[in-house]
Length: 554
Image (cartoon, rainbow, N blue to C red; front, side):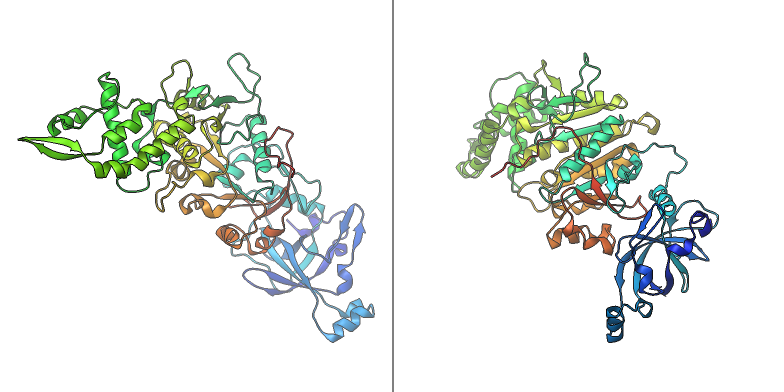
């Protein structure tokens, strides 16, 4: 396409700036004809303000039409220039504009695409982009890796900050195909932006699974039941109307939940659970006493506990841990278990912690076999099998402790991976978005430098191929494990103030955008993605849905 096709109604000379005078790998420099060409002017319906930055230009080159963005504008700092400007002699002043080349439209094309190794050339003419050029740019902003697949965009959730009243419409694959994370400090608008995107997913009947550890979104969506088909999401309240059998929790997850912090306590906890499983298997009440029993008999009993015998009485766990503190001794010719006071004292801390957790949280209400309440895994199965459904899981009733929330999310994530992905063929999958708020709290185990929850990381690595797309939020990207952050292809960045936090995400952004992160106002954000032609500066639209995020006034 030729440049005259864009300027057929207005002479393009009215938009002319100058010629390319310097070309670098990262950017190019435009020599403006003289200072008067940067004056403010209005041409029909278009208002041009070229003496500033952050506006678009188009470069007419032999390789095609390049679109770029002006990020620096300057005049030479010399005495002659100073005198000319003071005397109003603008024809003797030659400003320079630095532009970042965004994309190129080749002569046989009709959209802008990544420039790759193509670049502008010396003496190429540069013009201010008019409305038609910008419209073409907006239609080209998404990199179409799956151009053969028909996909409707989501409803608009933001406006372009550089183009007032211009709404943004992006396809779901652009946002979620490589997973998305919203980052920003407290009160920067991160949660409001997340709710705005969730609102569009639900309204556009996209399949979505929401895990809310704090209940912040509990009143944001109307509840659907079997009787009420008009509701938006099916709601589960863990510990209130939804439970999970204790047998569905792995020993590693129990260790994370009770925050074991050395090499011996996880083993003691696992032994105690196995003893209680033996009791449950044989329909015996109370704990399994090992003291004064033959070692061979105890080992035989424990060996009888198979993989199918996972149920046990959670209330008995503290007493059973105390009963596990034995040593092997002699009683005549017999080898028996004897009380070990040293181990008893060393395990007392674990006993107290388990007692505290069970007494001060609603874990007992959640980890049980109450048949009158919903089973979490059965509800997940129902959600996975139903297309265009939405499931909201509120975990706030069982405590907002990081370890508890982490275990719940790890349970759900591992269930999706092990029980859903492995057994499904591609044509049987109904893709969905998996949303987790404040993810940094639930990805790293407490009191451990190397032990991470694995569920979300597994989904980040394997889920995309099977149709599970993560939507995460965090206040501090530093706290998100590198293995998880490295799988994120799209970032919605609100205000960050700490240098180290910005450095964590600098590889996702162009250098020109890094300096603006600290200056973002509430509700403003930078959207960067491998699926976009350029970083987008957005004003997020606040949804009308109820949101429990108001800051109390002092």
